[in-house]
Amino acid sequence: MTESVGELEAEPAAAAAVFGDRIDVVRQFTRDLAQYGEELGLIGPLELPRLWTRHVINSGLVAPLLVAGRVGDIGSGAGLPGLVLAAARPDSTLVLIEPMERRVDWLRTEADRLGLTNVEVVRTRAEEAQLGEWLDQATARAVSALSKLIPLTVPLVKTGGQLLLMKGARVDAEIEAARKVIAKNHLVDVEVLELGVGVVEETTRVFRATLD
Image 1 (cartoon, rainbow, N blue to C red):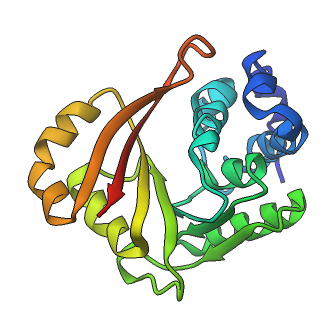
Image 2 (image 1 turned 30 degrees about the vertical axis):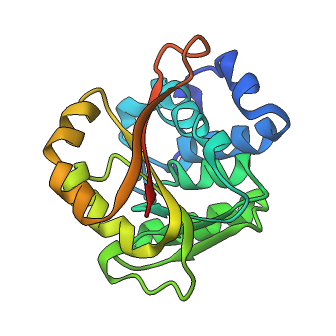
């Protein structure tokens, strides 16, 4: 495969602070994604110079919010945040839900390459997923607006479980537009967390809510 590692963004100082003793696994994932990601259609060429800051650290900032249980990543794609979170939190089981075969192949191959034994990859669309066991939490990154994403994720999560949905700067507007959907799906304790303040330049916003 074509190697693109030379174009990869240098590892920011914040990476070691975010990932601690799991940094070596995350470094390997980042190198692998840089090397194979464009060819496999997982990332675009413009993402390499910002792969650490925009994608890997952005995903890793969510790791402290995870429970030591089953966490679903909806539309896992390149493994952002799913594989990053699996690397950062070996005490959590990451269930990576992805419908596209080539992405599923990548997720399985990369999890094996990294030695991650806490990863399950399920090839399915979220609305058709039959996991056999409830999720304690569900996350998603850059999938769709909250009004569409909430109905896809809530059926997979147990009562008392959480949604941890990574969103952009317009998250407050999305919440306002999704008020009826939030109520219909019995979500309580709705809040927006801004992660990485004072640690990274590009902070991560997470919509967190509990299924009542």
